[in-house]
Structures are given as C-alpha cells and as structure tokens.
Image 1: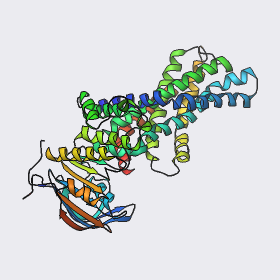
Image 2: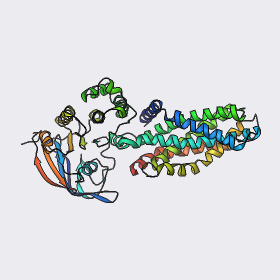
Image 3: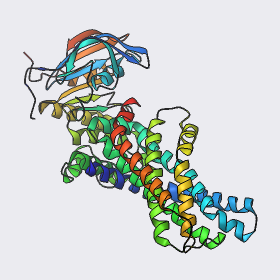
Image 4: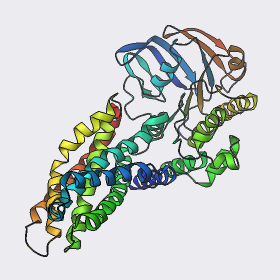
Length: 222
Length: 230
C-alpha cells in the first residue's frame, strides 16, 4: 500500500510540476479571494487583523475544491482509472498518495495566504508551533475529505458543482477549529486551543482511516 | 508463464446477458477462447464487441449466464481478475500530461517491475528517443496508441482484450500490433481483439467470431495456427 501511495504521490506532483495548474490558476484564485475579502471588510486595520485567520481558511477551503477537482480529473480522463484498476493498484495506496499530493499543494497555498495575512492584514504570529501544528492537521483533514468526495462525485455529470456542495459543509469543523487555532497563535497567551487542536486531529484521523478503508469500494461503484 | 494450463479454455462463457446502466448490451453470448490463442471479434458498430471485452474484463455487470474467465466466475468476478486482465480500449489508459516513458515508469513501480524493462518495451513499440519523452497529449493518435499498447506489453497479463487495436495506426503500426499479439499468444497469453477488417483479422487470428445484436452469430477458423490447432 505504501509503495503504491508513494508512486501516486510522486506522479501527481510530477504532473503538477509539468502543468503548473495549481501555480497559475489555483494559487492566484486563493490570493484574489483573500484580497477580495480584505476589500469587503474595508481599510480598518484592526478589523482586517481580527478577520485574517478566517479569511485565510475560507480561501484555503475554496481552493481545496479546485485542487481536488484537478487531482481527480487526471485519474478520470482517458480511461486511466480503469487501466489502473485492472493493473491491480492498491486503492488505499491511491487514496493516500492523492491525499498527500493534495495536502502538499494546499500547504503551499496556506503558506502564501499566511504570508499575505501577515504582510497585508496585520496578522501577527506569536506561537509559530501552534500555527504549524494546526495547519498540518487541518491540511490533512481537508485533503482526505476532498479526495474521498472527489472520488464519490467523479462519475456524476454535475461533479464540478456537486463537489463543493458536498465538501464545504463537511469541512466546517476544520474551518472553525483552524481559525480558532490561528487566532490563538496570534497572541502570546490567552485563548484555549487544546480542544480545537483535538478537533483537527480527530477529523484528520477519521477521514484518513475512512479513505483507506472505503476508497476501493468507492472506485468500484464509480 | 506460471499458472497457465495448456489445452484449457482461458475464456468459456455461455448465454451471458450483461447490463450497462440497466440497458442490455449482451443478449446471451456464447464465447470461448483457448489459452495461448488469438481470437478476432468482428461486427458492425453497436454489435456488442466492446461490451463483450468489458464483460470479460469484469467491468460490466452480468445479469445472467454462466462460465469462467481465467477460472473466475464471469457472473461474480469481484477482484479475481485484477492484475490478470489487460484492456486496451479506445482510451489510452495513460496520463496525458506525462510521456510514455514516465507512464511506464509509474506502472513499473506499481507492478514492482524492473524499471529498465520500460526502456525495452518502449523500443518494442517504436517510441524511442524524443517520442518516448514527449507528453502523450502532444503525440499523434497513432503514437498515443503505441504508448497505450506499451502499457499492456509491460504488464503482460494472462488475458489481453484489445478494442480495435489497429485504429489510428499506419501500416507499420498495424504490423506492430499484429506481432505484439502474436508474441503474447506464443508465450501462452490469450488475446481477444475486435476489428472492422475481416481479412486482416483472420490473418492473425486462430478463430474469428462475428457478433450482431449482442450475441455471437458466427465462428470460423482463422489463418493463424496456434498451439491448439489440429
């Protein structure tokens, strides 16, 4: 399983490196979303600073739908999924590899949006470890959920609209917990964050486990 | 090849009715193919040729009928055919953003095969030099077909199912497909392919079946004389 996962992970990132869809389309979308939110909130520095974490995570959640759509699209086109199924690739390995590749791309988006929040919105980082821990767990959760639902909606005709309709409501706990953790990371001490970090960890573990177990059956149905 | 039994039918199905989205695509097919043989399936568009191949690959649900494919029940193949059957359809089955070489390297990792074998396979299908390292999407239809064929050659499954493998190919390409099928059969693998060219198909096949309306309507000997010929 892990060898297949590594092969899929490396292949997906190789395709992204060649096509640069994420770099030229998804990343600009995320930045535009952040800037649009900033314009909507107005020039008040304190309002922007207070909303920075939320703006970043909403941008990441929206971007995750695009990244997942692309990730599933390359499997769906030209009969690749059928060919690999017949070749005997481990579905759990496919899930882990694709989740990993999606997570890497989301991490890049988070880094850019985080830098934008610091540079443009006045967001301060006081507890970097908390920010990083929350980001890693939230990213894994978002990537796992997206990959599961991306495969589920793969055969649907209206998959482009179905995917965000299904994924965005499910990742609301990740958004809330991610925002709370980032807000806690922006002050030296204060808000309790343990429970939110636990939510992110539980979400990631549950959906990764579900994907490993169910991904083969999902592909079979599709 | 291990597990191959001389003289035993690789495929032997009786009165198979298959459904695709509730629509009957096979209406009671009787079909058999000995191990190590090459079988051509002819028929007009919509006759059920592609559906037959997809059913033998375990990709289409069987509503009724009996028989086996590589010893696995045709009615309930589940995962019994995974890794043992290769299907070359109208799609390439390749990542179009990657080159044929990169596609084969990826497949080699999945199969735990020697990555150096990928180079030999590329040479076998005539995708050497720059053709091997150009993205599939940038190749011609015939070259992409060769790239797809390379995946099957690398996998070397027990049962090869090729849906109009000569389509989009020039004379050299057609000869290549014929020789690849001949090589596979001579090594004990079983080949079933569809075609719209009766004379060309008969030349390379042990048997030629004709389909119409989702059933096999005729079966004749081909010109090839495989290991089971009298």
